[in-house]
Length: 427
Ligand code: ATP
Ligand code: MG
Image (cartoon, rainbow, N blue to C red; front, side, top):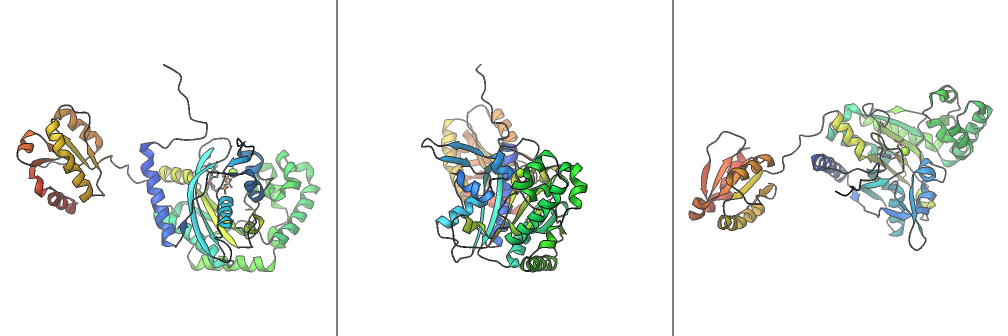
């Protein structure tokens, strides 16, 4: 036997035993965004590398060390998208969706980051993302957060996630704060770890995010961004909190929440769970009023979030909130002999048209009835519809219940649809 080629580390297959759960979550997501009036946008998986450098920021973890970048045959530097917001803004600018307009958009699909694979952290993972463009007031921040809260409700997760909230203020306020933070941390340079020393001048706010316990004391005494906040951002934040409270959404203000991407201003938030260990952030987002202009468009306020599908699905599995696995088929159709099989085909197609919600599996591969019944059983079907020589001679079909004790029944083909309609109505 020749050696098997393996999948790339950190890039997972989604097997049939799990795809039902993925579809369930996707369905809940689609329903939720539709009920808030958001429309789907799709963009390519590969973009010019420059797009991510200019948006996410040159000195962020993603751009510094996590991107899958390669040169195209003509020498362009391309990157597998590590996130969707930059792509969404690029597409919005390119197609004139953002100038002087409001857009409520969502997207879903694979993202790529070269990180150390572990539970809840992969190299190909999937995000569901949402972006609202053209509205500067905090009512839309609140809507975006309410939408996510609605989703937790739909999935039965409300008790298992909590909302952390912060404001990063205006770029100017952040600049002033940054200077104060750098001054403070420079005074204590000897206490910083290697990562933080490296970030001190490139991306000092990210030091606040450090998980290193040795830095906890130093960071707890650091100047706080809230002391540098501009009036407008402070008001925006106060209003947002008021709106969330009125909507009955609990939150905790976390002054250390800064997020890892450069483009945020004002509102930032994360939905966090304690049930997934270190990879506890299920959904994260915020406002990015400057990004559209930064990527070449006219100024356009924006707010959005992205949620990690794998983490969401892991959470549902961990908490045993995933719906029961579905059987492969509802009805299993079988025939004995070629003539019966030929007669069964139009019946099968007629039933599929009459019952589009039912999953009909027709036996293939021949064999004795006993073998066919074994397959029917394995498919999980409730009913077997059997066409043998007796049935063929009398234009009828036999129905057998596979999961309950009920005598089988021979039905005339002309009455089959209405018989099955009655059966379904009983459920
Ligand atoms: P983390 O702090 O966990 O690295 P992040 O801040 O890099 O997350 P974002 O870029 O904000 O994450 O992406 C939004 C969401 O996408 C995260 O909250 C998480 O649920 C999910 N996510 C991010 N990176 C990965 C990954 N490598 N594997 C699986 N899910 C991920
Ligand atoms: Mg990350």
